[in-house]
Image 1 (cartoon, rainbow, N blue to C red):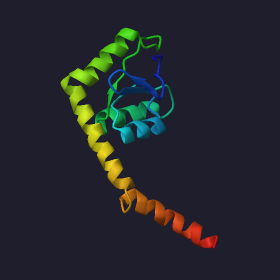
Image 2: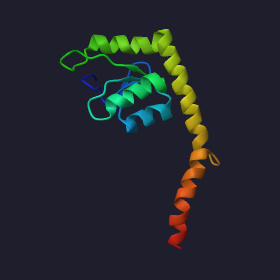
Image 3: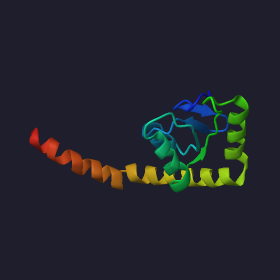
Length: 128
């Protein structure tokens, strides 16, 4: 379950996810309403973690050792924080609200559905 950066899709106890902070796994977790613990590996993932924790408030910072490994003890501590502490409650509430917004956006007539239809319109009409 845990290494530096965590698994991008490892489900943890209580409906949480550890993530390397790539946008694909982040969008999957937000769409499912799953709070995250972020352990970025490289590239833009460290910046993504800042956005996830500080701005979007859908994740907590994962803490790894100096060698870059995540201990089972640390992983358990982060999961408990997400599930039991006040900061974790805030993250859970925020990610649930974002999931609800995603569901609305993808409903027929929702903003994402409309935007996708507008994007596809020229392509579909050019093949007719």
